[in-house]
Image 1: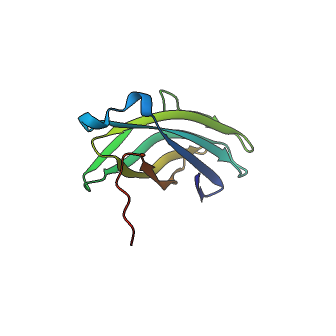
Image 2: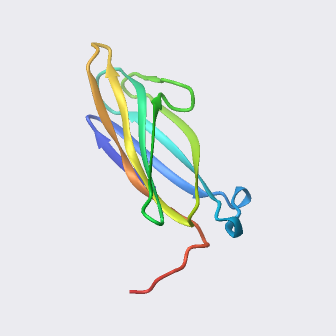
Length: 130
């Protein structure tokens, strides 16, 4: 599990490999990740946009930007949380993801919340001993 806190907004991510949706012989590896966003502050915020940076095992970067998450732009009052699960495919057996959520206060102030970097590891990646 991975976590980051920005301005009293905590983001917790738990990735997991989807063996049943992956096809290692065809260089197709799929992960899901469960995200929990907790408002531990004293002001109501709304998640307006997402920005992901996904790097595969060969160092190739893919960026994903868009409004909200899973078709929603949740409003989080103090003490509230929002959870969702999404996923990503990669052509390599490992990778890394991180990014940010664009939040907005009721007063219209925008700020970015860090999504912690987390590794995407499958059982098909070679293990290297240092």
